[in-house]
Image (cartoon, rainbow, N blue to C red):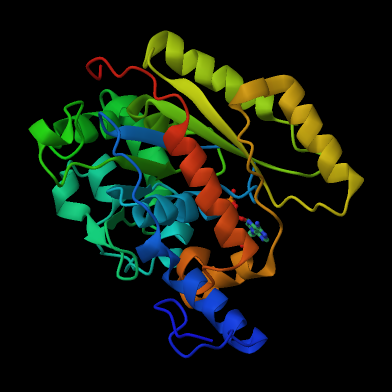
Amino acid sequence: MTPSLADPYGDEPTPLAQAAEHMLLARQGARLRPALARPEATRVLVVANQKGGVGKTTSTVNVAAALAQFGQRVLVIDLDPQGNASTALAVEHHRGTASSYDLLVDGAQLADVVTPCPDVERLEVVPATIDLAGAEIELVSVVAREQRLHKVLKADPRISSESVATAGEDRYDYVLIDCPPSLGLLTINALVAGQELLIPIQAEYYALEGLGQLLATVDMVRAHLNPELAISAILITMYDARTRLAAGVADEVRAHFGDQVLKTFIPRSVRVSEAPSYSQTVMTYDPGSPGAMSYLDAARELAEKGLRPQEGQA
Ligand code: ADP
Ligand code: MG
């Protein structure tokens, strides 16, 4: 056989070599992946659902990392006193670290509290410390307490309704806000600051219970504080394809929300749940795993999903 450029030694790869190549591709995928077009303006996405354990934090960090791997500039704001997103993104969040608490309560500016995620290029983080647990109460007596985060984001030049050409290369493309499992002032601050809502829903029996409360809160915020807010995507998480229950829940969610439901479901996967204990997202912990691949698909869908015309952020 004549050696060719593609096959210089004139032999077919063995199955083992093929497998190795596959692994390598999976691991290097981020670099080989074509970048997605950057949005016209910064998109601020609020990841909320007042139920705990539905995949808010997991979806925030993995969608954020996936978007960054697609060439987007991404900021994650951890707004949960538990600081799980900060852990997964390997940023310091012990008491005293500059954090989202300083933004909301102490009047700090965004640039004072942002720190890069060490493992993912183009991804930055505002960590959450346990101090934030007190913010819910401390904010009650503060003027315009629902608009604290909105004001901070509005004041930052890197969050902009201008294109990259005007605003500069380092303009953020996406800001993802990870909310705590409640509908208190922290979540309200996020809903007032954002334009889009991403609701993760766990594919389990009580999935839709309590969602009415979230939607009522969204209506209230829209009516009084942020008319721009739109439910932009529903993401079904921890989907177990082996169960009929999961398929039933997915159908029910689609019946309610139609096209707002992303086509990509996130499968239940041990790799996804292991990643945070190594201070990683699954995107870096096991980039070839089905969980990572699904988060890539979900991120692409979100990026391509009808960008609403973003005429001047209110
Ligand atoms: P929330 O932020 O809504 O409270 P988390 O993202 O922290 O939810 O997820 C709750 C738990 O479920 C965590 O232990 C997380 O590791 C696990 N988990 C999330 N998504 C998956 C998944 N796709 N497969 C397996 N475990 C998951
Ligand atoms: Mg969480």
